Image (cartoon, rainbow, N blue to C red; front, side, top):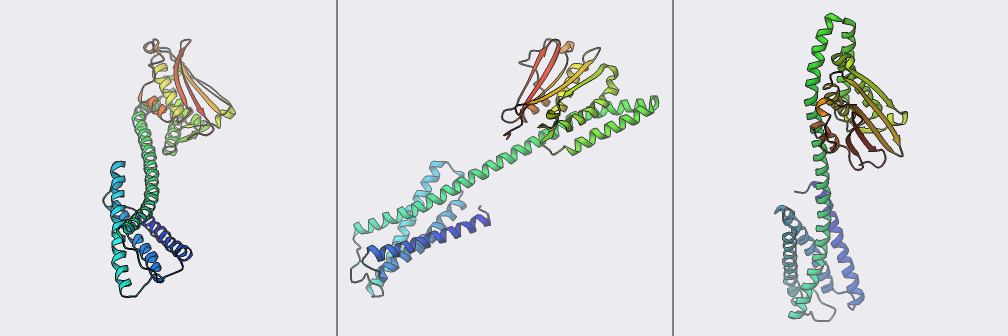
Length: 356
């Protein structure tokens, strides 16, 4: 059902449209019909009023019966039939008023007799069908465009909600494992190294605070994502100790570039899970980023573990996290994995201009 705003807008436009028809019809009758007459005035005003009510009735019937939920052909057929029946009803009612008024002498055509022959009646009907049909086509077209726009907005809203749910589900899947390791390591540090335990609590609290602050954002600055990753890696370093080394090379311009929330976090987690965790001696996670010609190129690479040494780049990287990342890149964004010189490189390219 239409909302009150669209209903009010229709009534205003419908009233203005048929009032304009009445005015033009009276002017044309006066100019080209041999002068104004009471009969011509009755026809012009009466037909305008009847079509005003009938057009509103066609709209109400179409909306109440859900014609726009049917196929296009069925919609057009129903509208055409409604226009034909409406025009016929308008002519019957107008004739039912006009003929008695002429017979009683209430109206006249300036000394001319009214033409009520079958051929003339058919011409009147076709003229009315044309008027009502054009008006209905105009209204139906505008309504269809509005419905298409609303449907697109609903689709985009549902897609955004789905993306948010995917992001939340991904966080729910990743965080418990991270928290489990972090709390176990913290428990061990409390007695062994209280000072380091306090620092770990600080790093962990910052990591959680960043996660909460960015929970509903779709994009973030690379500098902010780097801050989150540094805190995350500081916590993970307690678990991996000397097996986890970090090298960051990010230009100042790239640090101000925007990318999907959690994009860098996902790449780093992937590097640790499939590189550092499976290499007996650990290794170095390298993060580099440059921004050239409006394109951010972010690269995260890690040593290839035994289990991933033979990984084919065409089949690698199909986990939940990386699949989510690919879905967030938008138009023009690219992501690919490639093994090179004993390391796995994850490369993310994101345009910084005209992004959807």
